[in-house]
Length: 230
Image 1: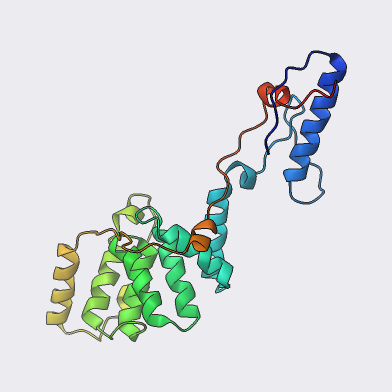
Image 2 (image 1 turned 45 degrees about the vertical axis):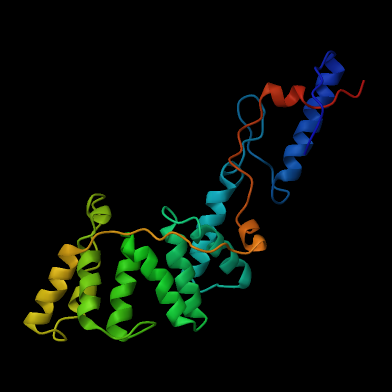
């Protein structure tokens, strides 16, 4: 929305400008419910309006976790996942969507990209994949490695989050002492690696997560930017 900047020079003009600004902000809100206002009467932006990109990211990841993986959700997750390091949550969620759609090998590949960077939930999923042979060849030793990495994950422990140790218990009885030692050695020598895309995604897919940046509350400079009708 582009408007010319004109100073408000009359009381009537100021009143009209304030009304116009209020209508513009109301038009950008969702639904017809009354909006909260600050002490100066200005509409307080919702969290979604303040940071639409993060809101879209969280919404899409949540949809993937629930198995709600339509083409739009996959496009959004792909766009975020292709941003690389820092978007491991999108990479894992994209993998979950592919798996939900029966594309297990491609799904496991995306989950492993997130796991390789140290994403805890992705490491836990990889342990399950290797145990069951889902999207990867069944390999109890490799699965146990991922289970150990998950339960020792420093990003969980530093926050005081207790990992789900039941994933380790699932491997008990399926490994010999020698195999368990190999899995422990693999986990001890593991170092994180961060996936970098080597191809360019479709323009429409890139556009799927290209939303407006963080919004701020309106200021007097915004009011001055509303055209004076006189």
